[in-house]
Image (cartoon, rainbow, N blue to C red; front, top):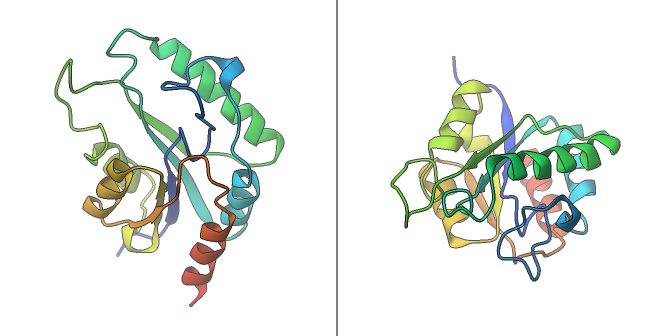
Amino acid sequence: MGHINKAVFLDRDGVILNDTGHYYVYKVEDVVINEGIIDCLKEFRKNGFLLIMITNQGGISKGVYTKKDVEKVHNKIKEIFGKEGIEFNEIYYCPHHPEKEKCICRKPDTQLIEKAIYRFDIDPGKSFFIGDTEKDIKAAEKAGLIPVRIKANENPTKYCTEILKKRTE
């Protein structure tokens, strides 16, 4: 019995959130959703994909902001997407930073992806990771997902269309 679900994994900053001018997005008022992402996620949902967000939040470890700040930002994201009828199955974040401690959950490591794969019975070979950095792509490849690299804050519509096409081929 193989894994049965397919998912789209998404990086947060630069993919879902516009991080132009911010090294870290940790204030609710700085939450700006990138153009095109809402429609993409609606299409993924319609086509039976689970949605999992995976984000490195090393600013917690560095003391720039707190877990509570991250939760507030995530609640705001859930609220915005919820109004559009889009639900994330889960949002996972790594609070660590390599300058402070070692961990296996920070991308390009794959612990958070693996957690989702087991928890939601996901088939990595039918699942995608949309990211805007080398770390995202490396994590995707290590976990057996199909990597999709976009430019930071780029409208991802054309990639989403390709993903949906690939899936039906």
